[in-house]
Image (tube, rainbow, N blue to C red):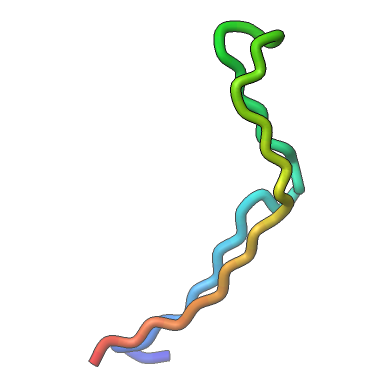
Length: 47
């Protein structure tokens, strides 16, 4: 790559952990998500 181009990689939730959000205490589940790992690969260029 050079000064005007960039290659990038991003990984989120690579351990495949579910997301759990609670309201006031553990018995009040507010949000539950189980979508697995997310990987992004990109290329940027300025000209």
